[in-house]
Image 1 (spheres, helix red, strand yellow):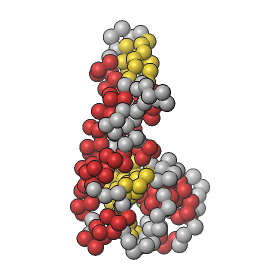
Image 2 (cartoon, helix red, strand yellow):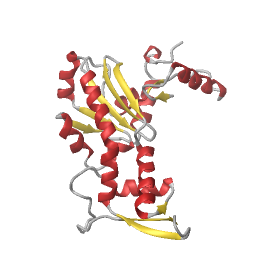
Image 3 (tube, helix red, strand yellow):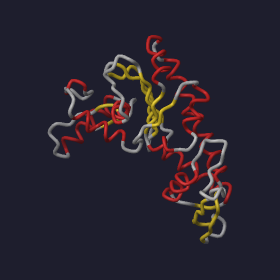
Image 4 (cartoon, helix red, strand yellow):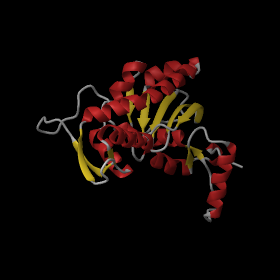
Length: 239
């Protein structure tokens, strides 16, 4: 079972206990960031350091890995679900429309971009997205057309926290590994890695090459399957 980087020992114990209650005799836990790295094709047992960012649903995890271990890591609760909640709040405040989480997520997927160039369709027409919900004033059904600039502004504000924590991770990286990060770049996985313009956005303030995982949505799952085949001593949950 993969876990965020900064959960407590009590939470780890609870997860191991959950596995036992589900009838799984051999339950082990490891850090999500390690699985994301392996699932993205990174050889984490190489002595060269690599920085991985996993923008998932509930958390964004940052980790520097070397020699098969997580040298430093941090985790914040600013990720996919947080983006959806901000979209819901925005639509309610600005358009006076209440929408659900599924609608917010669809709008995010369709329009999400951090790029200065707003997304367009194959004909060059600016992308928009129709959302249906309940008018907060009348209580009646209502439709609103969202534009990509609205979603981009929401995401840019949310990504300030991710930006701050990524810079803090880089600053905390041991000097002997900092040079490796320049050579190896930053690996980004998770559903958030699919946001248009993310690579350019991160490169602009880090001045480090960014590589988007070839399978961002399944990197953690793919890495977990590979972890199962590795030496049990690599697991955090070893008793």
